[in-house]
Image 1 (cartoon, rainbow, N blue to C red):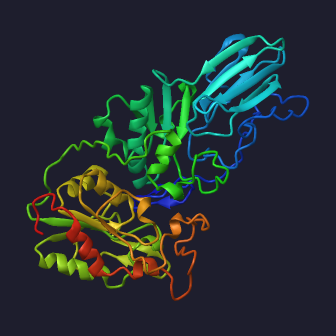
Image 2: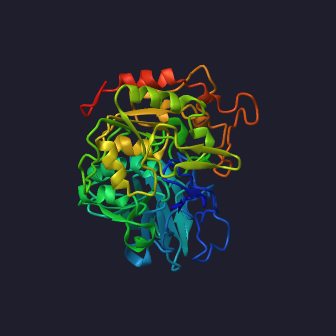
Length: 451
């Protein structure tokens, strides 16, 4: 089975759509690459916002390439700075320097202290328009710089190993480049790059191994930061704003939903008859449609309407232990490790797509294919807008977006509220075929197929 590693070290399939960035130790305000001050640093003098010298609780170093130990931009007198993983400033050992940086939009002083021979790093790693001021011991301003991305080399890094997340987040990187006029590099998985590269010639696409972090003025990291309780990597918890829109908040752009462009090498219709694509698999059982008769029921109804029903999952059979989900009876088998461009071609010409909250649902959205999305474990705000969203509000629902419940990637049978009880997976088990067909009937007939 063709699989690739997810950011947290688990195996993720084409259907995985949730990229967690796990916790590691932060470098903190003073890196181990330079000597620390001889005495503990005093508190910042009455900052108007939280001081920027507190170490972060979680960093994405396992998912993203490490930043250079020395800031990449050179100032006068041996001072260096950049905005890679927050605002970073390094001062030499010749004297004490008063270092101050502020949020240019709010006016808040975020850090102010006298240091020497040290590197200071902000706690906030998402997009902030920082201003830097450095004074010598006699109060002379030695260096001043305002964050400005225009014509600068900037990295937006997306975790590799998933399908839905980069599709959901990439359009906000496009908005970011349009807003700032920067020379943008987007890091993403090699399987995803061909979907976007030809449509965006002004963006450089690179895999993790291809990224040279020494050349960037600024870097920003997109991910699902479950344990970022102090909001150092995201200005708001992603569970509050939705899977895709968290990228907008991290990058400081308009969160309005925007579909990116995609160019396919072969955009021809794969079969002549009207057809519907389905995808039934998911990386954990909570994501699947657990109504035991659901898929067989709707496949039968769709075929009676004259549609061919084509399953485009990566795996025809998926599960663990004694619980396995098989290709539904009556569906045509187009499963397998196919190129994503081929999947997108099938979706672009389909009358519609019916599936769960998975990467293939996001690919269908990208391909302008009408989507019926069956999901109880996520709240509808978690995914893109579609008239075909199906959820049963009478059942337990939306645990994924509940900040009280930490998603466990290593627990295939994760059900935080009702595991091992009679109500386990009722969020999707109680979604009926009637609900799904009613959602289908709300969708526009986009490709001349039968109603």
